[in-house]
Length: 550
Image (cartoon, rainbow, N blue to C red):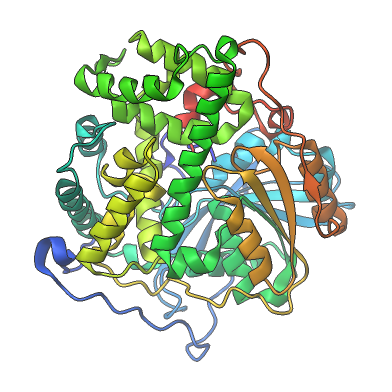
């Protein structure tokens, strides 16, 4: 889930990496001209031929990894037509004679680099996984080295975020809608030729071509957060090609794709619920938390307003306000209870206007590389009704239902999941790559679904719903705070390892409850280079980078 510190989508490198920037003629909907919704095109029907399997020419790319480019159809309705180049990476199992196949790793997002995810987390995978599989990843279409999509540049994003507020005023809705319309139009102007084709059905079809290119009869796959939705769509399209799928921090696919307002509401409530539980802990353990002076909730509300009224200058010449604080909390809260003391200390620093607080770091340039496709992919994947009155009612209701973090997210610029409705309800492009169901995956091998009860990003109810929608789903519950389970729970990690390696499906009703609890003293910031293996012991990724994560 970590967004890379470097910016692969904006540099040279492997052949064929370029942005597609040919604009298509279209208008932004009701905020501009009240146009009708674009039609959703039909999907491939098998009558126009099968797409060619990519030929992968591997070359060394340091650290024992091999990299290659894969050519896949831009539009699967024309499988023999134009192509798009995907950047792929693998690290081979040490003993090829003993390996069981290839494990696909898919990070969250949308917007995170699968290439960097594999490179950054390979060493932390359980030894049994590394010994059993070549570990493979890639940047999905529109992300990173695979034709990175860009709507707003760094300067435009920075201006929008600097102007946003942690405590929006009563007239914040209409400006948010206009800003979202400007973002949607910028997407059309700068990446219009690519927009229709970045949806998850086409991503899943890419995976199946890559599976064949690697010589695998069936797919072995671990996907976390949004990666769980990609895996779900793959299973729905190709159920007989599933060997083992782990869907961690799972989405309810039906609500995500076809009932997006219902899905959004549950995300707002889950995030505010996590923040509320953290503040309750602060109130109960003031000595360890160090924030709030007996009233953490009141102190938090005051801090947002104070930072809006007097932003804190940052080391790089920018400024941090109440919105900066909310943005950082949105991602940092994902680490679970282990980070709570550090959040308390960082909030206390913010009260003191100390810009070394990691909650007062404005989004980085790498964040924008993540956020652009995060908005674009979800607008292609999801079917928001194009009704301005419904949009206003829903967005304002989300802000009221989640008072701690909801208002700045509801009325902020187009950034992350919670802020997509205002943009996606005005989306100008067609959506041939959108998948709308069914999500049953009838006849598949057992599929392991992981859900965390206190997940602030993908609510636990989503994992329950997915396990019930799948024809052969099996739910493992992690009773904990934080986002996803693998790597944060020894119990869950061992269960996933046994399933991937030996196809041992956990018993029905399996529950893990081994989340690392807050220490009795405030911990130091986690060291650089922390990996999944260290996450098993309750350590998060570098705290100063958590705000660049999904």
